[in-house]
Structures are given as structure tokens and as C-alpha cells.
Image (tube, rainbow, N blue to C red; front, side, top):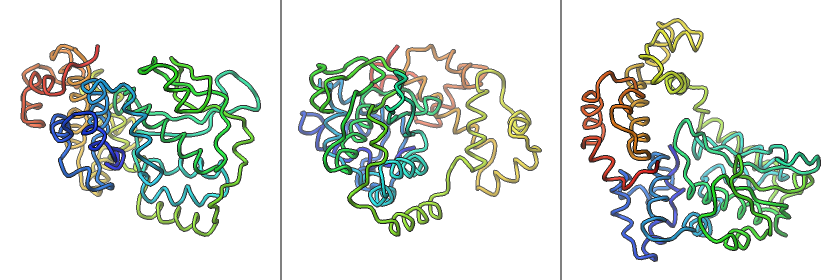
Length: 338
């Protein structure tokens, strides 16, 4: 999932480009009123697909970058205050990395070694967990663009970059990227999206530094937004994602992977208000959706990859989940990629 705030400015941008934002929202199953509540959670797959579809349908290849200009750090909600009040760039990045799950558990930022191996250079990485949702060029450009704009604003004098790396090939003329990131070196086909700068940037002090506010904000986040990775249901989901399509998933298999007795696993899931069957159904639903709307894979293959023995079982499940059959779901999302 991802906070609906990540689509802030989307409706206005689509309208400016001559599109119908309400029709796009319906097409990808996002409630019409979702954009009115920043804290509302929506599917990150639907979020990313709607960005790619809008860019394609409206012939607006830099839609992600344009949307980044319409947003700011406040889309992160309570996490924004903790970042803004951090003492240094390193502290702000550490806070963002620790609590990014508040915005979306599928996204991650952090400091990594320079891809070129330079000792005094680091990469400010922006990553998405592709086990949870397919790669989206527009969503990556939105996230990396907002990451850059936030860093520039927090530092005041701007961010002295060496380079920008983007995993996909350019969607717009390269000059659009060099102008947006204010750096002459933007490279494509990289292993991951990142901003590359001197390591010394990490020590830069932030103008809004306030240790007391930062500590209070982080305490609030820790108390009100527990890390989902510690939840049994999330650990079960991760295990199911790993074995789905390899063999018919069972509670015994997952319990063994998690080093738990099946009864203990069942009891913990019950305490979280769910069950193994419910989590398995959700994993199958989300995985089926990704395969159906983002690939041209045969439906019989999709059925096998989500652990169904028959294509008809997939068809019945898709109707239950989405109200249409697999063919209708694929058609409603537009032409899938390869």
C-alpha cells in the first residue's frame, strides 16, 4: 500500500493535460474520494499503473517529474516533521529510512556506496520492492524527483550532485532530466535509482534542526505506526510470496519457514485479526492483479503462478475479487507491457 498523498496534484495535472482524472481512478479501482484524504491507503500497484497509463494516454512522458514539482515533503505526513527537524542530512536520511514504511512499506531510501567505487562519494538510493509491485518508470521518476527537490530545500543552498542514475531508459529528452536535476550527468539503465554526491554532504547541518522536536516526532511515529515487518501477517505474506507458484502453499510450510509451530502461527494471526486463509487469499489477489494487468501472460500461466490448479479457479477468484473476469480486468487496465 501507499498513502494517497502520493497522488497529490494528480487530478489537477491530468485535467491540465486534457484528461479525465475520475475515469482514470475508476479504471484502476481507486475510489474517487481517495485523493481527498492524504492518510488513506491505496494499492501501490494501482498507484503506479495509473501514473504510467496517464503518461501514455496523455502523451505526457515527464508526468512523474511534473507531479514531483506539485508536491513537497508534507506528502509523508507525520514523517515529514521528523525529517525536517533532524540535525543533519545523515540524521534526516536515517529517520526517513527507518520510518519510510509509514508512507509505503514497499519503498526504501538509504545511503549506499558509489556505484563507481569512489571512496568519498555516496549514492542516495531510492528503491521499490519489486516482490510487492511491478517496476514503474513514472513512479520512480516521481519518487526520485521528489527526493531531489526535498534535499535541495532542506539544504537551502542546493544539493551539489555529481550524477543522477535512473534504471530505465529516458522517457523524455535527456535535457529534461539534466534541467530538472540541475546536473549535466544523468545516466540511464542503472541498477537502481539514486542521486550521487560527495560523502561530506551527510555532515551538512539542516536549517530547521531541533533535537527535541525530532525526538518527539520519532517517538510518535514509533508508538502510532508500528513497523509492519514485525507483524506475523506481513511475515506470512512475505513467505507466501516466496513459495507461491513453486508448490501449493500450506500453513505447515509457512510455519516451518518462520520457525514456528503451526498452532503458534495460527494463534498470532488470530491475535492480529486475520488468518492464514485470509492472508493467502490476499497474496493471490494482489499477485494475480499484477500479472494480469502488467503482462500479456496467458491466464493459465497466471493460475499456475498463484497456486491454482485450474484456470477456471482463477476466473472464479478474479470475479470474486474484482467483479470482472480476467479478460475484463486486463482490458480495463489498458494494454499491458511485455
